[in-house]
Image (cartoon, rainbow, N blue to C red; front, side, top):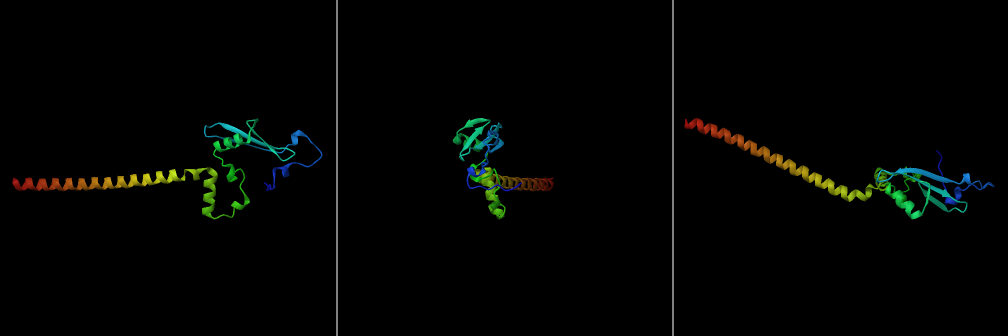
Length: 155
């Protein structure tokens, strides 16, 4: 796979003499949205460099196109349809941050952190309760032994 680079969408338009409609450059991808529906996204590039967006082969407004892409967990601003060459040389922390942003999990970080803290608190509370239970059981065993000794002396 070769790298594709262009400064504008118009750079992808073939500049030959043919105006054959079947030669319109386009990109098509199928994604699954949050409702488990498969959506097919297509963008065509016209001769003047303007793009036309389609969802399931129906012409769509750009705003609707972007909203539907977002509903599939894709952040159009994160450039995650293609891996950018500049990403390859990032540090582990920068890569993790990139993939969090790309996957949309960055938006859930606060919720995740809160849930993680609650889980740790619950584990600590459970450990303390288990320790208290063990302490009570040790005391019960000790008291039973003392009762047994006391009964032996009384007899």
